[in-house]
Image 1 (cartoon, one colour):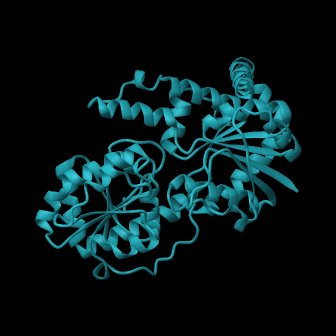
Image 2: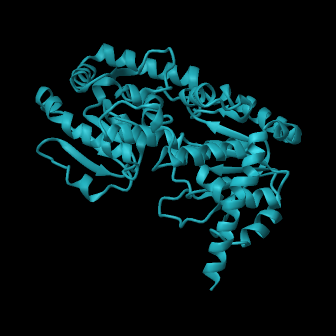
Image 3: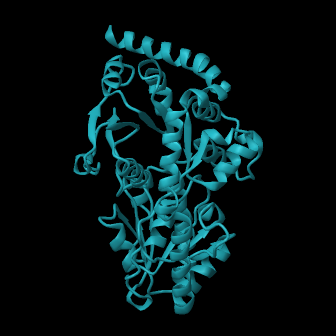
Length: 405
């Protein structure tokens, strides 16, 4: 049987993060092709970590900067190794290369970290992004990791274009694989059966916190026009500063972790997501479409999601526009129903799993069969394997030796 080893930054939490849901989607793709899967992680499990044994995935705890990993990966002898974000490739990539040189190395970016960082810098300095913002240490590390791997998965068409057109990465090293959706259940509560607004997002993620701050700023104007409405703010790992925004009199309710996103979305009428910056695809907006929940967001929030299709609500350009469209969508039934249909259409035409799964697995198998030829064309990757990983390797060995004292 073919064997996939996943090296994860954390144990997946699909009910807490879009990254957790994405990981389970990847696992499902490989299992459908009869891969045995082992998930390796050095982090501690939380009460909300998904029990991977329920889907027949083996798990093992590994150590950072420890040669025990060498024996572990050699005994597993994987056909494919998937790194969950570039930091994991930095940490373990050289060990995989030395012990399993014939394993296909795949990097899942989740989103381009250097892009999110560049946008964060511009946002916090209250200015437009300039090219120099990209060229950070994170950029150099992430780019090096992409070149060292045989294939890198990008979740956003915008990021594919950025990588190929702006940074001239050969397209043979990249693969566009967005969020994947099963068949959508359209039997959900109707317009008149719902009330209130909703927002959701893991509070450990800085763009989500900035989104909540925007909501707090906009809410009084929305509430003034819709005095009976409330905004229900959900999110895992709610912080103390977020709890301080809770105000029942204002109808601004910080509820913390949602026991069920499906239930939270099916009861409310409109999702509010004034996202100021970020990268990749926004899991909250993807799930809203799946559950028939129209949304109001920003150009940043909707980036790379709807293509040329109409949005399932409104994409706004400023605060006044956001407030106006939120009230309009909340009160106009025909507009709301049309927005809901738009969301279903986006899911069907751009995110349905059948659109991607066969081609992706064919790409994986083709690379496995032609790995030497593929690597020989990636000469920059070979250079970086030699130079960058030598420094990473000996730093790791130094840390291991120091810890042994």
